[in-house]
Length: 588
Image 1 (cartoon, rainbow, N blue to C red):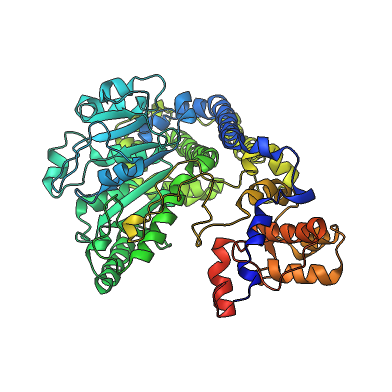
Image 2: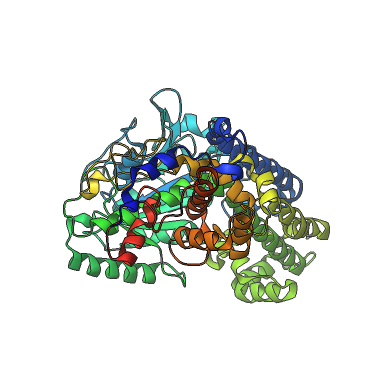
């Protein structure tokens, strides 16, 4: 190890580096406001999308839904304004004692009102966790009529369900951004159907339609997918993109057993979920207790971080999710309109209506096929043929409303003009840095894409608990593994890095070259600085490598320091030290 690599003067030099000429002026004061500004811009953007979607729905979609009885055929109530304004929802589904309630407790970092945890079926009701100033439980009947909550549609399941539905309110930083839905453990046999007193799968389907994320939990010791669980998974059909699977309590088996259990779960899911893609399964122990065995501790830690990232970015995806759900609904409404209009058209004027109706119902597959070809529709937009035929038997085709082309044109206009125009208001990979900054405000300049404060634990994975892990001021110099002398400079330089238009988080070589040439240093000096800064040798500079390059340029220009032969350890970003160490074959 060279003396230069551990010279404390370089750490002192880095601590005084303010970002040089590339740092934006006034950034010190601005950084204190970026967190609030990011959330404000996110809220404004989501509110703007919700407002436009409400206008589109009320003007173009709702009249067609009422005309062709969408609420009856799809058992989905008409949407209200509060459903467009609601927070992202996360629903947890699984058999009893798989750790659903324990997972919620771990996510919140505390107990919540009405919590019941045990090896037996303890959660016997649907529980919605809401943010509020005081701890209390709210009965289901009161929740269903609350003017600011999107649960009015649950009234259709009756008092027997509402008596087993409750809200759990508590002050929580997590619940400020998302709403959690805990479901009863899925039982086996007749108990699932008889003892509930309501149609469990229909309630799950109602929540699934409105959820932004559906977490399906499995116990490593109970992999059998019963008929009841399969029925629940079937109720999630059409929402496969929202589903994330968790293989919980995996720390209670060894590595060989885990490999077999994981394979068996994927095999079972492949037979149950009718999706060509392999389901994403997170493996680990998702509660606050330390792992029972540390054989797979590193794997479990990475899996947990990936899952928490999925949860943390939900608020940023909320606007797009609302658009996606309305588009799916519009496509189904348009297809239903064609079906009802066609059935109405086939009915005789006076005699033989009932006989013709029975014939059309019996020949429904061919009817669907005719409508599909005639109007060039997608098979995926048609309702389930068995459920639809049951619904048709209880209505009179002669009472149907005829198809109105102007309403169909209005729906088509929503799909081809109004919603694409709304999508243009959201951030896109095609945006220039200036356009992105305009759309996202300061939220694009924070470098932090997370809005839900998810738990980050190291002690449960057998590591020494780090008191500074959640410290917003970073790590101290006494923590040699995580301390980075340029941490503050990286925050100050983020705006200037974004303004250069990074592609996928990296500055292209020609852009980085132009930036370095503007420093006025000689090409030989810049060559040395590039070799030191491009730590992973990919020919590109990410944000941290850009900060290192600017620091070295500043040290040479402003302080007259010679360019080091190798980077001092405190200057190397912690995430790249292992890479540099493995390449050099020696310690930093």
